[in-house]
Length: 452
Image (cartoon, rainbow, N blue to C red; front, side, top):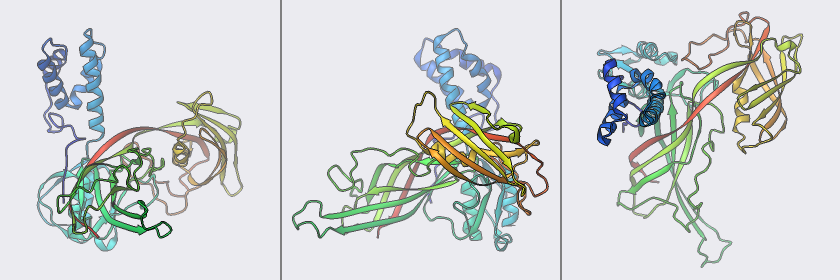
């Protein structure tokens, strides 16, 4: 099992628990404008290590009289804020053997995530080495002893709980901050097209595909992943597996597909992707080393904004949030206490289109009906009318949550599950959640993967 904890994680005073003195922060900011290049670079490095405590001063430095200070402060601010957002939730592991249920209760308390497992696994004994590690890695360490694994794609996409099901953690895993990349399978496909003559250059197809999966912590849902970029792939004979090469079957001119190719705008904690390679020799038995990175779109912040506070009186109302305009064409409550809401939604201004349909896919997860106190109705589905690259007509149906549905504790900014029946008042607010996203590249590396 390989481990990587660098890249997305800022280290220094902030994460080591040492708070820098205000005088040190002020001195470093002033040094950003020093005439000496090495001193400017050194000051930038010190501020980066200081992390969060330097943020207020860096924000103020964006109005500094020195242009160089303003420029460097602005750039540093973005780097530090991005690094903090992508820092993993860490857990401190204590000495001693405990039941799995006690361990995950401790992890839940330290991270703020809801963590649950099957009843037959809860009393399994677990004893981990003392230390401080990222949550996803700690769960895999526990899973190897208790016979459990983080379940993929289980539950409602808005649910922020981590569920451990029966099974074994992946044999090949790479950890990078709040992310885990796993190698899931290797597939070798061979084909001969008998419709072509024996001398045809493209008669034979031989491709090698590495299946991969990426997991993210619940507070950083994945919206999509791109084709991975491989920097190295060699077999046990030290021959390159990189490919396909120009002129070979499968070559696409070096183009990389749109980053939402797999996720298509849907929020999830895990997504699969593949890496194309080529087998160099019949004698090769293993992938000795494969190294690369995958770019993914992350949902880093969610801000609910009401479209109306009186949904049953909102027919004909229009609201614009950012570049998205909503028109409530109708809203009715049936005798069975179902609420139907018909919306016309337009993305962009002046008829501009982006050609990206993923914003349509996300509407189901971003529109909610609430009572006056913010308690949520259950979304029973949606039906679509006219739609295009930047326009859609759709109807949502909401209902009182079923008996037995329990509210879930949740990490900040991530919606929980609906409350029990009887705790929801009359329908009042139709809410649209604004998503702030960021693109991030996650590295991975695997060794000694068997070839079929």
